[in-house]
Structure formats: structure tokens, C-alpha cells
Image 1 (cartoon, protein in one colour):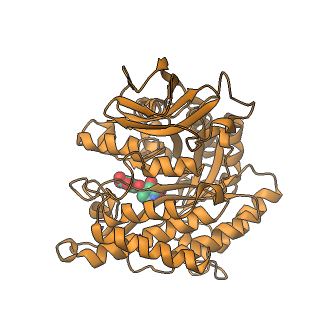
Image 2: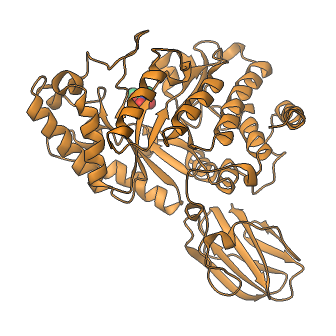
Image 3: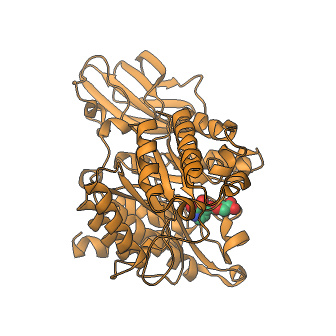
Length: 463
Ligand code: XIL
């Protein structure tokens, strides 16, 4: 980015941060719409409370409007999906997959082989290599098989590296490593690939944002990824969890360096669990400057994310400070984009500003553009799905107000509305002036207006 642009975007961001309002953005602009224009995914977990219907109504409304990727906080983990041997429990995960399909969102599956949240019956086989291999294989075959074609990406192995200065495999308190040895990782990737050859497969871990010094966790992971690639192990992505604190100012640049190292290996880097917490107990003393600093750090991560072509998903480990593992388990607080009353914080504005400062034409994506576009049919459409990538109005414009779509400058227009998965949900011919978009649920859509050879495609939010 040029220095002029950096200065002007900082000024823009300061203005927005001072207002603390999102009204500086157009009504139909959301994190999701801006990310989609850039062919990227932005996500937030569905907290466990959501799965039990025990969360405020605002949660889901904001979640599906602002994000196009979902992850279950706990409900696809080993203990949740196979609580008893060879007895699988998919209800909660199915609920999330249905929600994702209805709202055109990408699903991350989290997580298959992890030392934590393993049910007691697995630990009872501790040290029995053959048995543990068959338990892990059966789990991966069943779970990945169940959601084949519906879960786009799996965290195949989670947190397998230790926290030593001289990083190596986590060799204690891991039933998989202790019983099987390091080959459990290689096998897990191979089995997951066999169960769903189209799914992306990630290695996911924390503290990767501490940099690529010699012997660091990040360097160790890069070395292993290199070995996996050389040996034909089907890994396609690394996830950096990125649970950080407000004082960790150098971490965005470390993530950039990691992305570049993985690009050499043709592997995507995803931010999978971002939160930027303040020390627990400090909430009452936090002021505008603290939240601006948090916003600045969030923004730096988004800048890196958009500028590195092999980064694909930016996922936050929660939506509102009212529901966050930070307070309960991490001695931290207030680490997310929305406050406890669901009001967007400066961090929200900051990442909107970052998205807007990186024009779609300059952001590269690891994903095919067809993942982000509605179908193209009828006159004026080429063979490529890119034919309906948002275009600026040639001779007319369209505005949504409630459910009324107003069209200026068209004599007799054909209006088509698609959901975010590209399915047609509304169509009307001979529209003059305005049309009521009947029978569409609240949410984000793409509307296409055509009049003769002129065509306008834009995203709208129905409220
Ligand atoms: C956390 C959940 O947020 C908590 O509800 C649960 O009690 C423990 O796990 N790294 C991971 C996530 O990979 O699965 C963890 O989620 C947070 C750290």
C-alpha cells in the first residue's frame, strides 16, 4: 500500500473511530458484503448458547447479516459428536449446517483430532496404539462422512505442538500422541481426505502469532507443513487461532510473515479464533482510547488478511462480549466486536474501514470467484459466473427501503433477487419505479435489475 493511501485511510479511520458509529457506512454495507466483494470469508463462532436456543434474538440477526462463515464453539468436537463409542450425535452440528445453508455461509468443522474435549471412553484406551488408531479413524470417517460436501473445511488436527521454547510435538496429556505417536497427525489428514476429498484440511494452533524465530511454534509448524507437502499428506491450510491481548502489538506482522512462509508451500493461512482481550476486571476502567487501540489492532489483522493472497478466512471467537470464553476461562474480557448490549465497538468500524481501504479489484483470493456469485441466466450473461460480479449502474440505480425496491432511470425493468447461495427467491417483470419484494425473509440478498441491455447487480439487506 502506498504511504499516501495509508495516511489517508488512517485519517478516515480516526474520524470513524471518534464517532464510534457504524452509520458512516452505507445501509447495505456489512462486514459480510464487503468481504464477499473481495471473495473472502469473515466469520464468527456460533456460541454454545445459540445451539440451545438460549441467546438474545439480536445474536442471530447480526450474525447472519455480518458474517459469511460459521464455526461451532463446541458442538463438532469429539466429545460432542461421539459421546459414547461408535454412537454419534449430530443434531447440534446439523442445526448449524442448516442455518449456514439457509443463509449462504461457509462451514468450518472444528475439530477432529485434539487432546482436549476428548470423552472419557477414549482416554480409557490410553496407550493402546491399534485401538486408538481404529477409534480415530472411525471417528474421522463417520464425522467427515456425515457432513461430506457440507463442511467446507476441517480443523483436522488442533493444538498438537507444545509450548516449549524449543517447540516440538505435545507429548504429554495427549491421548493421541502418547498412544499412537506423531503419525496420528499424518493419518488423520489422510483419513479426512478419503472421507471428503473436496474439503479443505487445516492444521490449527495457538501462539503461531508469536513469530518465526528459530525453534518457535510457528517455525515448527511450517517445517511440518513442508514435510507433509513433500510426503503427499493432503493438508491445504493452517489456522492461526490468534487469541491475543491488547498489549500484543507485534502480532499482526508476525501473521503476515507466517502467511508468506506458507505461500511458498502453496498453503492457505486462516485466522480461525481471533479475540483481542483486556485484562479481566479492567472493564470498568476502559475508555475510548482503549477501545480505539483494540480497533487499531483488529484493523491491522484485517489489513494483513486482505493484503496476503493466501489468506482466506477471518474468524472471530465470538460476536458479543456478553458471550465469550475470555471472561469464563481466560482471565480476559471485552475482546470482541460487539459490546454486551450488541452495540458495535470501534473494532467493528476499524475492520469495515480496512475492508473499504482495500478495493475488491486489488484483493486476491485463494477461492474461485464462483463461490461468491449468484447464478447468471438469460440475456446479457456470459458463460463465466463473473458476468454478474457487482457492477456499477450504467444508466439506472436501485435503492431498498424496507421491502420496497425503488428503481430510478429504468423504463421497464426485470428484477431478480438471489439469496447468498445464488438461489432465486424473487422475480418480477415490467417493473416501473418500484416493486415490493414479497415473501423474502430478513437477510442479505443480491438483486439484479435489467432493462434492455443495461444491467445493475447489487447487494441489499432486507430488514
Ligand atoms: C473453547 C470454547 O470456547 C469453550 O466454550 C470450551 O469450554 C473450551 O474450548 N482453542 C480452540 C477452541 O481450539 O476449541 C477453544 O474453545 C478455545 C481455544
